[in-house]
Structures are given as C-alpha cells and as structure tokens.
Length: 276
Image 1 (cartoon, rainbow, N blue to C red):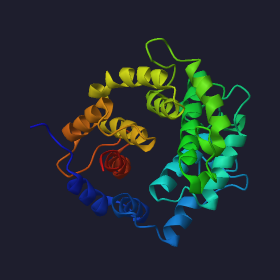
Image 2: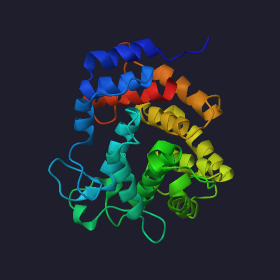
Image 3: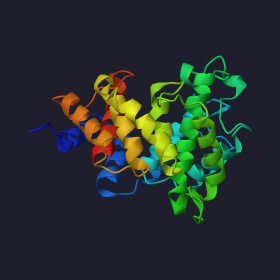
Image 4: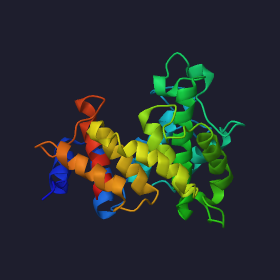
C-alpha cells in the first residue's frame, strides 16, 4: 500500500508549535472557523495607504511579493473578501505594467531578494505569475471581486488575461519557464483558469518530472496552488505531489521548510492545505 499523509499528525504539529495566527489558519482550513479580530489585526497590520504591504516592518514602499504573501495568509483565514484584501488586490491590478507584467518598485533594489529584484527578467516573470495568481483567486470569489461577470476571471479578467499572455510569450516549447521554480506552478494555475489548457499542461508536465527532487515545502506549495484554482484532486500531478509529501513527512507530523526551522509550521500548513 502506498504511503499517505498523516493529517492528524500534521495538525498536532501546528497546534504544538504554531502561534495564534498559525492556529487560526489551521482552524479555518479544518473547520471553516472564522478568525477573531485580534488575528485579523495582526495579519492586516502594516498595510500602506495605497493598499500594498511593505517587504519589511516599518517599510514605506509597497512590495508586490510581500502583498502576495499577505493575500495568501488572508486566503487561508477566509478573509480575502475583507476591505484590506480588496485594497491590496486593486493595488496589484493598478501596478500592472503595459506589457502585462509586474516588477517591484525601483526603490526596493537594494533590499529586495533575488526573486523580486527590480529590473531582473527572472524576478519579473515570478512576480507576474504571483500577482496574476492572486488576482485569479479573487476572481473565483464573488465576495472578494464583486459580482462575477461572463468573462473568465470576473472583475479582474482583463488584468489576468494580459498577464497570462505575457507569461505564455516567454514559455519554452517544452513547458519550462525562464524564472524561479515557484513561477512554474503559479503560472500553470493562472493559465488553467484562463482556459489555456495546453500551455498549463506543458508546464505541469515539466513540474511533474521534477517533483521527486523538490523540497517538501515546494511540493506542498505546488499542490496547494493548483488545488486552489480548481485542478482536480485526482489529477496525476496532484496524486504524485501527495505521494511525495507522504514520503517526506517527519515523525513529528511536520515538514521541513526551505527557509529554516522557524518556518516549518508555515510549510506544514501549506501541506495541510494541499492535502485536506
């Protein structure tokens, strides 16, 4: 019998090691329990007047990458329809470049990590995939994006479609992409919801070939992202991802983060989201 993820052990790990926000995310993922005002104050805190969040505490320049990270937390909490998330989504849409992509403000050049460095084409591809992914998620939720219209993606349809065309234009014939690993599954999710199924499938084939060598945190992020945009649970790439997560789950119930053990709870929450 093939290995399966031990969700109960994963839940126990988060309960034992997570903070109040982590446990609130877990409760929402498990039972749909809405977070308390204190949790929302923490996650929504620090938002800048224009709608984005800064990359660092007390920062004054909004960051595309940091804003997408906050939207992911708010989505776990079922709060992507709240005013803070709506302002952030509108800010992302406003920040789209004429070519359909995104990049960070030049003022962040000295502090941005490599995957968000202003002016770098690989970083621009990743940020485009990430911003378009969260605008896609918002388009799936009438509460967040307003009444959905007939277009794929609803109220952000034009923005996401332009982003999708920008991504497709840079894909290689074999489905590989000129950017960081995570840009692959984020792009695949965007293109899937844009009904660019062939392009999305080519990326998924390229990703599937790499799952065996991916870190647990990346496999969890891949699976959670594709599930979030409606890829079927029994799709072969998700089946393969769950198998990899089962093989890499630790005896304490958690999974290892790529960013240090202080982020193991975050990786484990992502795995729970991928497998629940």
